[in-house]
Length: 474
Image (tube, rainbow, N blue to C red; front, side):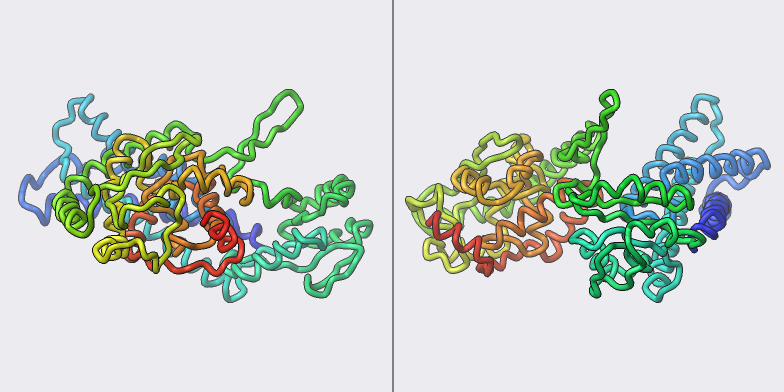
């Protein structure tokens, strides 16, 4: 079982990280004072500084442990852990510089500290990457498994087993399920709910996964009692799983535990400030970078057909507030532009318009929408009020998209859901993005947009619901 060796593995990784940070210190000293020209004899080589770095590495590793970055069973994204390592080590190195400045220690080389920051961060990230890669590889081959038993045989149990089978890198083995009724597709039936204490007795399962349906919830006290008697971890899939967010928050009001089903990472003020800062800095830089291109496009639009250079259309933004979104005009001036949904072979498009739409160049003016706060670089694509009023009635949870600023690109768009594609799929991807937002996820989406996501295939959707919606709106 994993839990037998878990503490040993975690301790080994923590010790290894302490060693790696000290190695980074030693290499940084040699790079600065033996390789690069300059001063060759500094107190940095004294035993006192080695002791200081040793205690710094202990503090750093302790913080990472408190963040559960050494938990080999953690399902958190690897990228978020690396960002935390970068953040903590950056603050730590800046803290060392500040202490030296306050103590008037002038013999600390800033170049050395730069080397130390780069190497120590890189070593920790590389170690973590290798451990995750090796662990996932071993799990795919059937090693390092978490052995679990499922309580239930309904929709939730079937979905859990399917997810486990489709993600072998998670290292979960379902040893069987407990239910009064046998279902062959679920695997081995270990017995009924009443037999649970006898089934668990003497067994060393890693966890008991409760996947009871709403009408079976009265079995829960017996399940908890049996698991606690044998000291087995209890994990529960809520029967309202499809409505449950990825990262829920809880409030305690007296004895009532209240789950906030619509809490998102961007509700955190620090995350919101970080995202808005990236939008302001990024959009300002991109406006300067693409200014000459936008000038050329403006001339091309003006020459391609009569009408204005910019196409202004009302869209629905954050908290359902309307705003005027800017685009370069790619179509001839027409009467259906307020409600029309363009398709790949739309006869309204000009030849120049087709070109700039194919490479998403028509959307460059939206950098100004981002700069003034109406949009974000990354987020759900905004829709016109006409479509929003229909979709909110037809598509479940559609208006959750309005909890964040709409974006120039998004998680749905980099997965090919652009133009006339399934609105249900787009909403599903948008909601996942909102519930799982991180700074690194935004960076990933932007990179995917630049390297492949800017080509707009404008494929017609095969989804029947979308086709019906388009027909009603046509």
